[in-house]
Image (cartoon, rainbow, N blue to C red; front, side, top):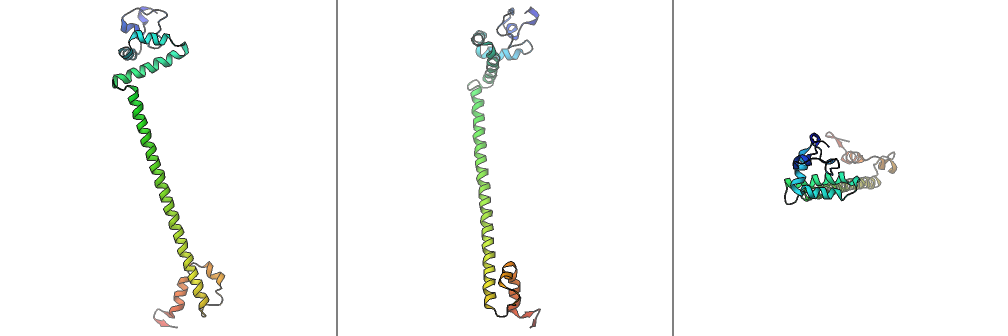
Length: 173
């Protein structure tokens, strides 16, 4: 590389950028802040050594990882990226806990709804059984209203009430 196209690392270190510069592909001159962070945390020599020890196909990923860790360490010198990972794990645990809570509330409401439906069905069945029993005992029950028809009318109780009162709007029958 010529003097005018030095990589961000060589510019920062104020040196010539050799053609085989190990840092040039990963720290372009257009992003000097990336190398500044890495240099501050790892140093130029360590960064170069780490990259040169890796196969070529892994160096870009390693440079990205070093850059991420370095920028994380600048923000949080004690924990760096581990602090970010810990926060994300806490958020996952909170979200999982909230999901479990929500699922249990849904299950509770479904069970409550099923119980209410069962109770309503039992009440309706008891009312129909009472109507059927009364109809069996009552001689005045219309003969055309057979037991099979009684079971098919859920509001027979109204008819039963009318039949027993023998009064309608104050008139006796």
